Image 1 (cartoon, rainbow, N blue to C red):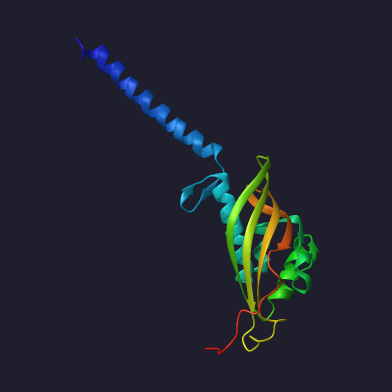
Image 2 (cartoon, rainbow, N blue to C red):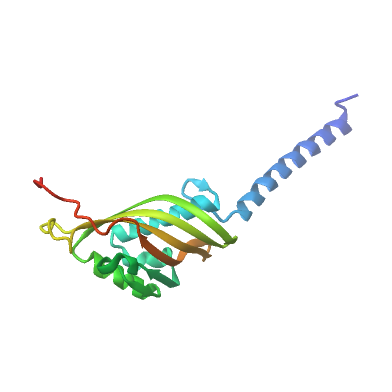
Amino acid sequence: MLWDGDSTHAFTKLLILTFALGFLSLASVAIASPWVTNSGPTTPFEALISAEYKTAWLIDSQNYTALGEVFADDIIYDSTDLGAYGGRAEGLDAAASALRALGNGARVSHLVTNTLVLDAITPKKWRVLTYITWSHWVDGALDDITKTWRIFYRCDDIWVIQDGVWKLQYSKVLNMGYGAEAPYYGNKN
C-alpha cells in the first residue's frame, strides 16, 4: 500500500530533506556572495557601479569625511591632465583635502556614465574606465571661468575590494575636451 505507515514516514522524510536542501542551497548563495545592497544581493559589477555613484554623491554633497567608504587609504588620484582644475593627491587625507579645497564655496555635480571593466586583474582588483561630466559653479560668479566651469573627462581607475566593498585605489583622469568650458552665457535666470 502506498500510504501505509512506512511510506508516509518516508514521504515526510523526503519532504523535510527536500526543504532542507533547498534552504541550504539558498543560504550558501547568500553566504558566498558579499554583494548585498538595500535591494538585496547583487553582482560584483553592480556593486562597483554603486561605489562609483556613491563616490560622486559624497563629493557632490561635500561629505568628505565619508570618503574612506569609497577611497582606499593609499589612493593616488592624478587629475593633472585637467591643468589648473586638477592636481595630484596621494593618500586618503590628501585626496579629501584637495576635494574640500575645490568644493569650497561652490556647488558641484558629477554625472557618471559608461563604465567599462577593462581587466579583472584579480577577483578583488579591477581596471575600469569611466566617463564623467563635472560641473562646478559659484553663484554670483557664473561668468568667471576660474569659479564656474564644466569639464568632460575619462577616468582610468583601479578599484579594489577592501573591507568587503569596492574602493578606488588609483585614478588617472584624462581630459576629453578642449578644456574647461563656461557653461553659462547670455541672460541668466
